[in-house]
Length: 85
Image (tube, rainbow, N blue to C red; front, side, top):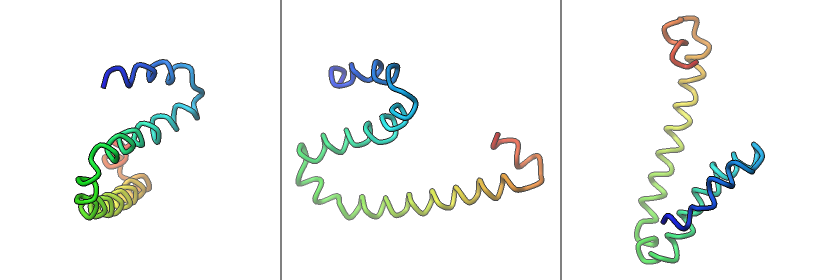
C-alpha cells in the first residue's frame, strides 16, 4: 500500500484548509470503499446487512455522544466542563 499513498503528504501540505478537510474526511475513506468493492464483490454482498446494522448503531451513538457533549458544555460544573476544553 505504500506506493498508493506517496502523494498524500504532498497533497496535505499544498492544499488549502478546505481541501485538506475534504481530503481527510471524505477522500481517504472513499479510497477504502473503492478498493474493496471490486476486489471482494461476494464478500461485499454477504456483509451488506452487517454493515447497514453497524452504520445505524454508529449513527445512533454519534447523535447520543453529540448530545452528551452539548449537555456537558452547558453544565455549570467545572469538573464536567474541564475535560471538554
